[in-house]
Image 1: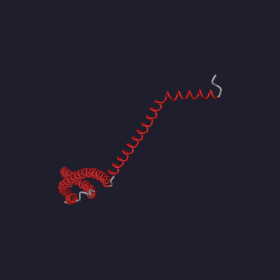
Image 2: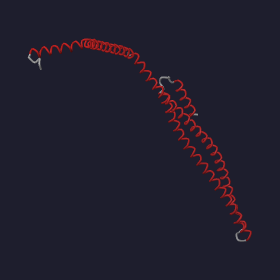
Image 3: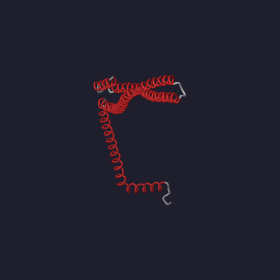
Length: 236
């Protein structure tokens, strides 16, 4: 069957596709799905036509059997009228015979239509089975296509992330960070050392001022008194 051959080709192309070229099986699967949907549309159209033939054959068979029964009733009426003297016996026999011929023709037509109906019903059943197989296959391939696309998305994202990580290592970014850390550490140590030197200088000056604090104050008072005496302001 062409459908099975197509499915085999799709599966074969996917089996032989390279792992790093996942776009190919996706495209093949999408094309396969489009072909299957076209086949499904054709099968549905054909199934509808065959079912219509079943209906027509059944209607023809029923109509022919109805006509056959009607011709038989007419033949009976003709013979009854001839028996009552309402119709010439010879004419009644002739017309009744014609009616029976028509009855036989319609019965034969009904039999042929019934046989056609049976044949069409068998064809419709087979086509309906094919349609169900197509629907099931399409559903299966659609689900597999969704899974395949999801896998492609995940694998592509993983490849990009791993590639970025690899490029970071190869570009020496880690080494740059280490050198930057070392430079910052040197600057922090240098700042701390300057802070210690400044603190030590302030501490020495404070100790000196503290040690000379009282002596400096006494000398300043003596100098003030000498200046007042020189200016004649000692009494004040």
